[in-house]
Image 1 (spheres, rainbow over the protein chains, first blue to last red):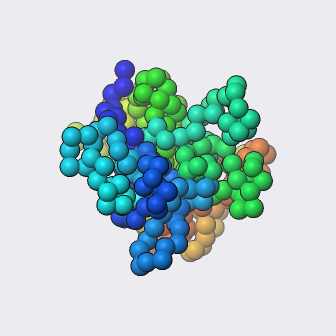
Image 2: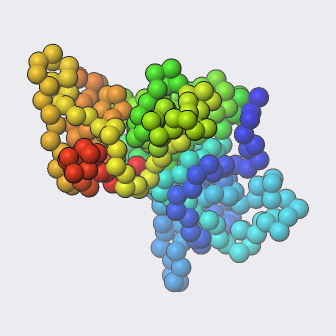
Length: 172
Length: 147
């Protein structure tokens, strides 16, 4: 039985650096989950803007754009309306559901999907869509920006007793 | 760790558990962080801290940027500790990179390489030497951690 309350997409046990950022039009349109990896993107105005990570990192967003825990509160879709988010970076200890469940190759090739098996101390990267993963997807996909940067370690593996949250010590 | 005890400054890494908890064990070169207090230090005797950490199975885990002074560092080279000959002291100098040894103590040697560990070389950077051990500082090493 889970002993830690996990009522959001991303739970923070200790926090590194945090700052508000502007989110890109793509993020506004598509929404995001808490723990989403983001990278910097240029803007025509004087603002610091992020968008979905493509394997590079700037940090990750602490709150999802429209989480169930925000419903019927002042937070309901507030980030989408005002086009902002809170980005964390540095050394954090978090638990999140925003991680890749299946290998990159099986996701690309289609079913059957091959589960990723996480183990304590596995090195983590951001996937090509900005989710946490143990695969270096920039390398696997032959991306010119390969290899992806190291962004953290697995601190707790997903399992039923922790509601399948992935525990991560971030280093970014 | 609860059985064997540990010193303050001991390097630790993450381990798996069947429970919903964050659990660490002795580092083998991988870092998660280090433990602030030893499991049964002389300064804890005759206080409510006496044996509290091993009894309740917890430690206070530190990561990030710290300046610490600790005795949890390797005094002798890995080769001399495992080779059976005379122990060869490690000479630490200010600014040197440190990492965790195979038993989780701070050292300036990459022990994965001489031990034939398949993960070698150990390229993690976890800190550097601020002050070398000397009689004037009771042979503590002072480190700036970057974990």
